[in-house]
Length: 327
Image (cartoon, rainbow, N blue to C red):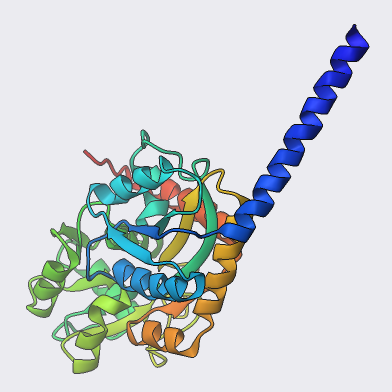
């Protein structure tokens, strides 16, 4: 009786494995057969939306199915992420995740999803090193100048951000921590308002994403002091990095990545990854992103997974160190 039972279970297991393999093969051959939704955790017109629309159009062309951009701003990106985490893992709901996706676990211990367990990585899409910009009237041309002024006049310098615990807020706090200074944070309801006040001289510094300030830097209304990558930015080749400028290890990158719900078939992930890599390598795509201040990137799913782990760890350490609480 026991032998028959074991044989029966073995046969059932083999049949189940066979069904999975056949199902995976079928998915690979038929995907996609209907429109795809790309959920974006930011509003229309923002940097993430710009990147999403470039890649959505490229995917539409290559997959012969419309990829619709679905903007779901609000809730620090949690609304969009939860929507995708709960979606069917069939490749028809994608998440365009911005930098905040890697920051939120440090700020919100009770997220309605697990950023690593509930998603499968596809690829990084684009990235840009943050740029430290100042009002031109400020007698600061280098990072050394900025640090010296902040130390000589504690509490006088103010940096603006798009809101409490936003990526550019944490970039400023990271600089404070690593440079040993205390530039006062001023939160705004969005980056445009903060930038307006920076140009007007009501605040002195911002740790901004290049797309939001490049036109103002080129026109001379803002001065770029340093960029926050490991190498100089292609669009600002004469501006040194913060690392070059005397703050070893300081790095802050604004990025966008493509994720799908966990348990999405590997065949679907492989197809999406293949097409995203092809899109990122197109000269016109690279040029459009570069004009906006970003660099096209095509990572492997494994590299994206490692990147997310590193981001979550880094920001968690900073949030704990500065005692930041989000109500």
